Image (cartoon, rainbow, N blue to C red):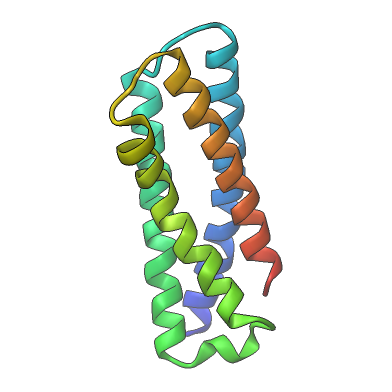
Length: 125
């Protein structure tokens, strides 16, 4: 299980860096009054897949009893669960497929919020 812990930790670092870059790119696009395009949506899907992989690894660690090393396991799981559902929620419920410049602003700020969630989840260890 030591290898899974290592991958879980390294993936968490990769996620917050990826979401920071993705959020800054989104803000750059929004300031330039560009709409959401396929490149940005594809990058969002990759970010969501990263969160799903992180959740699967976290679930494996939880099932094997490795959550004892986490200071606040409930908060760690809460942050991870929220990160899994927030981006799809914003896209499907709030934006409803809006790919205008307003949608770009909303997605950029959502991604930056998820960047903060990723940092916070990593700090609960």
